[in-house]
Image 1 (cartoon, rainbow, N blue to C red):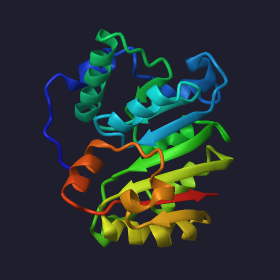
Image 2 (cartoon, one colour):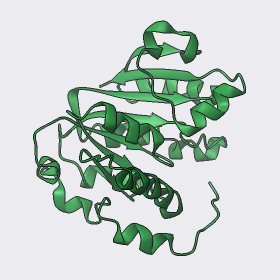
Image 3 (cartoon, rainbow, N blue to C red):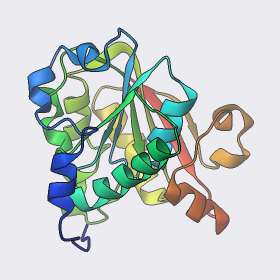
Amino acid sequence: MRLRHITGSENYVKESPKVIHDPSHHKGRWNAVFGNDHPIRIEIGMGKGQFIEQMALENPEINYIGIERYDTVLMKALKKWEEKEKDGTKIPNLYFMSIDARLLGDVFEKEEIDRIYLNFSDPWPKKSHANRRLTSPVFMKVYQQFLRTDGQLEFKTDNEALFTYSLEAIPTAGWHILAETCDLHHDPSMNEGNIMTEYEEKFSAKGNPIFKLIAKM
């Protein structure tokens, strides 16, 4: 994925109090970061942060970590958070990280994460790039290192080819698919309580169906 670099984004992220800059230091001790023993849920590739910020606001009894490897994108999420703070809206149960998802096994301890969200991930359409897809067996094995045995992974996309691939790749990695839909917004059961991402709003406004699955180990 090619992004337009924004000058100063690295320093902006580096100086933010909402970004955990040495995440491996907190492995096995993330509850100390939040100051409580609430469940911890993560979104990998959170983009501008609309989904995870809203999740954190609606569920104060759950802790959230938004993960975005591109500082240019993470800076936009941080600015949105700062706007809420200025308006008096506090989100103490949310932090951010800038890190490659392949390294998350070095950041979280076994059984430390309650749920994983993958929303509108890069489809990496070339077959030679299949291992870069966040639902590939390569990444599913990374998630196994820290997701609770009773935890779940939720995946949403507008890309039918990526969804079809994921329906095959996830079981190949030893996971079980609990539920799936090829039209989320017209599926009353799976759409209940759904919070849309920026991409989801954009694609659904065009009439594109949204695909979703839920999986567990």
